[in-house]
Image (cartoon, protein in one colour):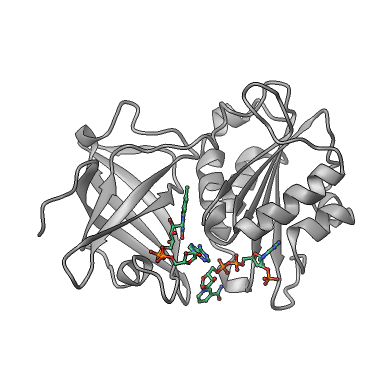
Length: 262
Ligand SMILES: Cc1cc2nc3c(=O)[nH]c(=O)nc-3n(C[C@H](O)[C@H](O)[C@H](O)COP(=O)(O)OP(=O)(O)OC[C@H]3O[C@@H](n4cnc5c(N)ncnc54)[C@H](O)[C@@H]3O)c2cc1C
Ligand SMILES: NC(=O)c1ccc[n+]([C@@H]2O[C@H](COP(=O)([O-])OP(=O)(O)OC[C@H]3O[C@@H](n4cnc5c(N)ncnc54)[C@H](OP(=O)(O)O)[C@@H]3O)[C@@H](O)[C@H]2O)c1
């Protein structure tokens, strides 16, 4: 294998889950000693890399779906990936299986963490499209830290039912949170019972998201994290701003913050 680039460590894929055609999770094991202490904070992202046909490393950012999981001398990091047909890295990842090598970035980063949510927040709304649900699943694994919120709302918007990933995990989390956690699936390209159809911004505008979550959005009590498709983030930001919500800045508290995936 080619020498591992600076800021990366060689890992091994210990589990692969195929959710739908082109949508899969990779659980990677890598030496804990290569990462900072603590290795990362739930909600952050790192990088994955693989060699292309020209023997060059291709590297991209991916969010961890799990909070740090230490197993002996190793760290286990799980990633949710969608294959972009003309992409440079994801078609290489699509061909990776259990036991295969992969390189992982050793400097996780990102501000979509529980600590960054203002202290005054009572209800945390997590709005995602596609693989953007990943960091929210990691946040929700931090059950103790999440107890500070009165309500947690996880919104997952996808094209097809098969892409409503980690449903069993979410159902288990809902049991753990005993009513605190609300899950709102949205499927845009087929009719699915128990899920909203359409798109996130429209459902905020007409109140159907609040209805489905059995919770009111409020300037005083709510904070919203948005993650995934930049067009969703753009359109949702417009609607939120029309409703009087402000982007959160460290120097000036607001009610929403986001992470664009491309
Ligand atoms: C902070 C951060 C976290 C990320 N976390 C994840 C993650 O957890 N899971 C994940 O699958 N991706 C994630 N991404 C996107 C990821 O980094 C890659 O961009 C993506 O996997 C495509 O890589 P590629 O090399 O196959 O395509 P590229 O060759 O890089 O890109 C092809 C083009 O596809 C478009 N594109 C990129 N990503 C997507 C997408 N998801 N859907 C539609 N179009 C896209 C862009 O316009 C891009 O120019 C994240 C990105 C950022 C910035
Ligand atoms: N999902 C698949 O079946 C599939 C299969 C093969 C390859 N891919 C590749 O993977 C990429 C990512 O697919 P994806 O399904 O994760 O991503 P996506 O295109 O981001 O769709 C996820 C959800 O976001 C919604 N959305 C898109 N634009 C929006 C906006 N402006 N405002 C609000 N919501 C918006 C979509 O609704 P709409 O349906 O209304 O757009 C869909 O419900 C695609 O671009 C494609 O290259 C996807």
